[in-house]
Image 1 (cartoon, helix red, strand yellow):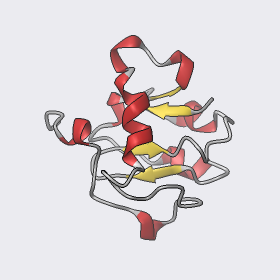
Image 2 (image 1 turned 30 degrees about the vertical axis):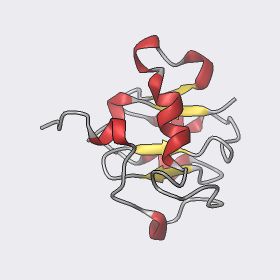
Image 3 (image 1 turned 60 degrees about the vertical axis):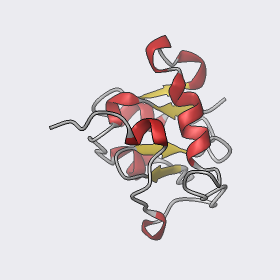
Image 4 (image 1 turned 90 degrees about the vertical axis):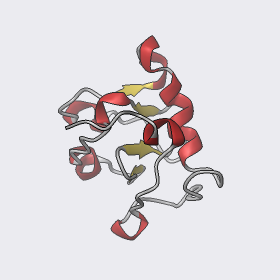
Length: 109
């Protein structure tokens, strides 16, 4: 099981989750953060600090945000960011690329 970043993170990207992740499995996209599912160790620390309640363990993602299971996974594929299993986030891996579903989301003020 893994944790998943969902819709409330879009255009917020607070970043506190990055500070607490012990394995650096959270990556910065253009408009939101993404959790690399194969690198996540299920500690749940990210969930406890998210100010907009955007992070859920995968089997607890609300139905209205279930698409974000695929959004987080697919973000790392060659068709989106190409990051794959980068082995842990660092600032050099920051990208302005987003999953197409996130890129298409209406801009927030």
